[in-house]
Image (cartoon, rainbow, N blue to C red; front, side):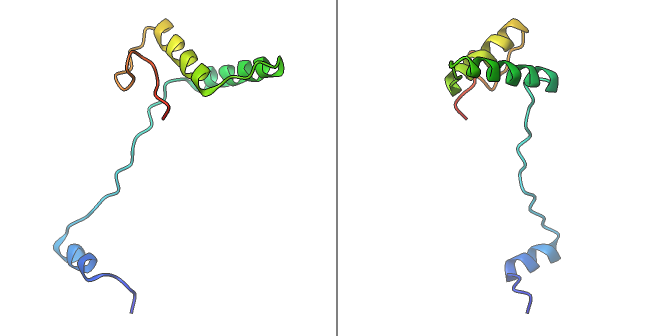
Length: 82
């Protein structure tokens, strides 16, 4: 009648719960720093020198290195394409 699968009902009765894995997003830049970066990217783009994704990855690496932060999720503090 409600189109609920038999296995879902069995799991509910037995107390088995499946929770969706939520990937936590780690913030690398504060909101102020991010807003500043966006402002600078827009300014540079207006000078006919647009930023590419690779450029932004280099900016992120330079910022993390200058701040003395080591991000284990990045190889050599260099963000991946993802």
